[in-house]
Length: 411
Image (cartoon, rainbow, N blue to C red; front, side, top):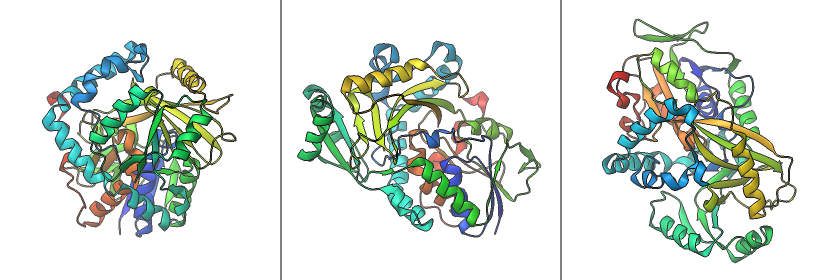
């Protein structure tokens, strides 16, 4: 068995650490933040098995003008952060060719196919299968025109293991009643799921790690590479796993790798759940690029893709627009709202980086999961476990190798 240091205590790092510790490895998680402010703990809670098409796609590029925040959309390219998003955008453009898109879709489909079963395996192992809801999600539209276009687009799309049905009449009636008749139509996805409470999930994974003999250290991690081996200052280990979200970029640079991550910043607001139907699965309001999720004691409305620096101040206009959307749709949510902003770690081709370094053999990595970090956490954990144990990896890791980006001067 190996001694392993995991840099990063988000859902990817914790799921992997728990999996490894339960197999008997000595595992130490180093998490720089003393509070849970990573994107892992502020996301929509949605197990998005239907999102097999990478966002680095010709269709995405064609819709950018109408999706801009200045045009009322959910995509923000702040002028003050152009030095971050312009180089990323150029790389994304190159990754959006039809050939690259098809290869990326095939690679993502291989990961997503096992996402729900992997979550079931992990949560059963830690005795909390109740945290996984398997009742799919709903996509709704506010006009018959957008409903017809949206339904046609989803019916033509590849959705992996998820399937689409007409929404139940009772659910549609409930949506219309709770919004004052503003919902024109909706569809129901089956095969997707939800984590019922992200705070509980974090507690459960941390407790499971400690119970299995692992450690959690709240401090910054200094990665060193010398004579072809990685180490973390102050922590003896045979293997090092980089799973630090947007912070992985600088860590991988230390190891001689180029990982062109950007902070894809998302925003949410939360309110009391007392007026929200408990049985309603995650609700996507596609006209407004917004997803609303009920957790144990709150309801969360989330939106926006804001490219920039992870530590730049939040833009309060995003929260204000979310609150306006809630009001305009008539959702049964009332302030005061709790506001949050977090940075998704995203690579230009919208594929994660998962594997073992070819330059530093004892260095493993798992980061860049963009909108799919929660969805793919247990799958990623099982892949890393297979790499550690020398077992056959269940998917082809070539599309996820960090070396696909070359060195910085080649980008």
